Length: 374
Image 1 (cartoon, rainbow, N blue to C red):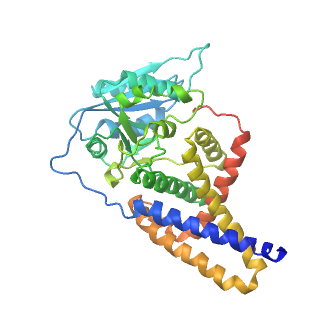
Image 2: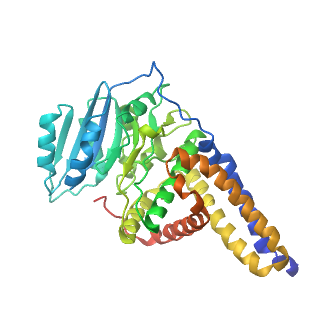
Image 3: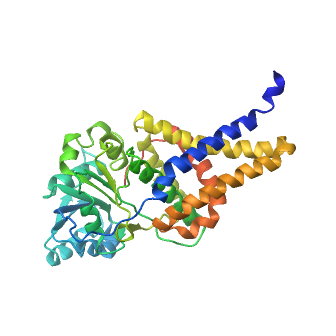
């Protein structure tokens, strides 16, 4: 009996290898083979309200807001919630309001007795929107083209109530930027692939859309208002169904953002984001935890096996490279769609770093206090 225990690392490696292939072939391949469609000649462009919440975003408003106000779209407004800003955002918005009649500014003032988070600001923006269909982004985001809203608006066809877009980060020098862009890509290939499998579990507030009716039918953010983050992913997690969600990842519909440039600011951002995942539906928490844990065990068992079983090193190495080859094949197609193809050759390093960082971050987040959005 004891002799079987010495093979536990090999058994763990085999099970983890199988699970990793399941995620690659059954899940991530969905996005890899997805065909991005151009706008049809008879495309439908319903009235839209773009909702943006900004807190001390003066410089970002100067740089990015006009690219949204100048979208080539027949009927839209931009609802800008100026959330208790103490910089000169107010004057920037006053100047833009004179030049753009479809800019609707809602100003929130600081209240000594009532401290609110982003969800309150988003709710105010939704209530201030005049159109039924709403597109959400952030002040530090810039659409790749003036066709962004056309692609998002047309995605509401066939009675869809939620549209999941994609927001890559700008490319900068250094490993941190590579890792941030890979983590963003990995998050995207996961939530977009599951949406294509009719099992949407999250979206990213830098580029997503949903209907006002769905928001109020689901009682807005009431069930998770106590969690500072989650105005995007928790809303999708609680309101997406098998039939009401579409994805929109045409290059012209992608919205670019500035990444964090220090490890401390990035860690704080991830801590804020991770706080919401604790409130996901149980089935989604299970499938995501299995995704991370199987990858971590794959790497641990592989390293252990290489040391413990010299006679199996060739087999272990072959299994590792087979997984890597399939992974790179599937990721290559998805990376091309999501505009991070330059990261392909760094997958062996970024993949292992990503999974161990995610596992440790998830563990230590259990002991962190919740963080406000700004």
